[in-house]
Length: 148
Image (cartoon, rainbow, N blue to C red; front, side):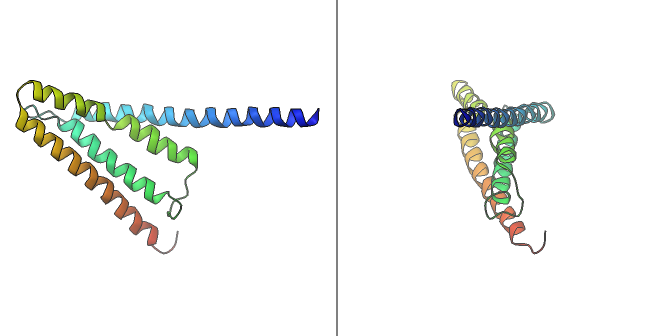
C-alpha cells in the first residue's frame, strides 16, 4: 500500500512540475507578445517596408542567442529549466514574428513589390542570423570573465 501511495505522489508531483513549467512558458509568451505589440506601435512602417517585424525578429534573435549561451551548461549565469523556458520559449516565442514575416512577404509579392519582398527576405534572414551569432559571441565573452 505504501508503494502505491509513493507512485501516486510522484505522479502528482510530476504533473505539478509540468503545469508550473507550462505556466512559465505562458507568462513569457504574454510578456513577449506585449513587447512585440509595443514595438509595432512605436516603430513606423516606412514606404511599405515592415520595420517593426524586422526589428522584433532581429532583437529576438539576439536575445535568444545571448541568453542561451549565457545560461547554458558552460554559461556564467545559472538559470533553471523554468527560467530558460520562460525566456527562450515563452518570451522569444511570443515576441518574434515569423508568421507575420511570412504574411508580410506574401502581401508584398501579391502587391507586385517583388524587389521590396526580396530585400525584406534577405535583410531578415541575414540580420536574424547575425543577431543570434552576436548574442552568442557577447555571452561567450561574459562567460570567460573572471569572478561572479
